[in-house]
Length: 261
Image 1 (spheres, rainbow, N blue to C red):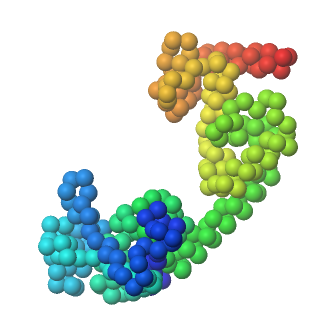
Image 2 (image 1 turned 90 degrees about the horizontal axis):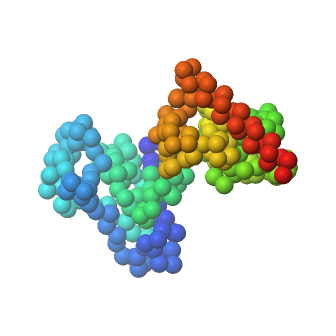
């Protein structure tokens, strides 16, 4: 990773007005705050406290008076930090843990209270390259799918439980839209060893063969699992194969009746 990072203003932050954090040429202090236990959030590990404390000749423990006066001062322009300099490394670790600082441009929306973002050219390039690689992999896997596989996978996304009367072109287009939104999720789904069972459960619930209450699954009044994972484990148990076969037959019968309609 490059040893130079830059702290920049997020212009679309909810805390800004017309894209600015403050009046021009005024200071903004990114100061320490306390967590729910009353402990100052420093971003430092015990090892960091000792190592950087020795280099800076400061007590960097959360209870130290050092943090009462510490802050990172920002003006209108971005600020560079050289991580080879102990003071700058301390500031970097402090910023990584601060609610007002997003850790990178690519994941800045995970920090709803962030006014600033840490930019590192090399890190951002690595993230982008990973995104491009995953998108290429996802496209390759998409081309391998049959229509039935597309239907099954699409059901695992929200709002696609019933696809009986949906045309093949629409199914392909909708699944590709989901791939475009999140190629990582698409790759996780198609690589899931329990994919077929998850689709089976989705179909059983959609056909009212099984009933789902919150995260639990019921067959009639019998609870067969408190969540998806435990339900799949139960149905895959050889001792419960009779139930699995019965569920499959019931699902097939209901599917036939739907097609007749």
